[in-house]
Image (cartoon, rainbow, N blue to C red; front, side, top):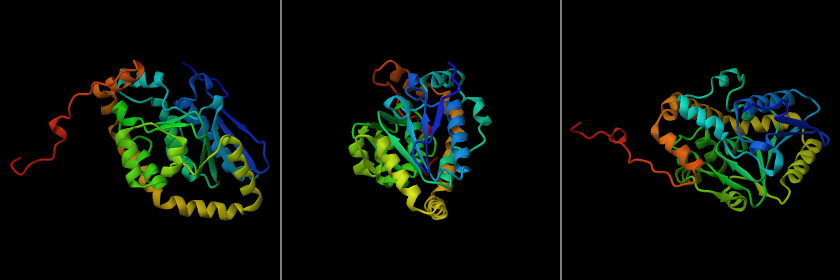
Length: 273
């Protein structure tokens, strides 16, 4: 599987704004290394563009991002390691948090796994009521990748983060709004996000927006970085595990997973030990 040159499209339809569209509709915008590289590159260029004051991020074909591309996950399961091309991406995983301009996610269709992590790195999130959300990781025998733990806690609190990570349940846009995972719902989230972006660009000082964002993000950047790096340090062991292969197989075969019990290696040591 190869990606074409336009997997990320940037348009400028409203004054002071730019829209970044994840553009792999044939794969429902499933996340890949080339997609991450091009998305972060687009954000970097827009951050330096004086004509752009607010950025909107959305997905082509009526869906945001359903998570990692399953073709890539199968390769990881076969090789027991992540794509070495990740090293070619200049920006860190938490780069959207560092962009000094408001980033608004317009979400529809499916938003799961790494797709949800990317939405949570945006400053504001508008979703369609029937969007389906899930953290997904536990059902694939994966740790909370991409800083998902602190990103969810930042948006919706520690209790909601525990609920959504430990159950990996699917919830809709209305519940996402009630829980605080998103800021509002709209039947046309792209139009609503663009309206917010245009109004903000026209009425708010870019210097103030950059300062406000820096102060809002500052208490969380180190937590997201530490969580991402901690998970990445153990990822090869996870990807080479039987649990991960079973989690992926059950998803692809559309059946309940058959995970073995927790091994004693995970149990706290007793005094006698």
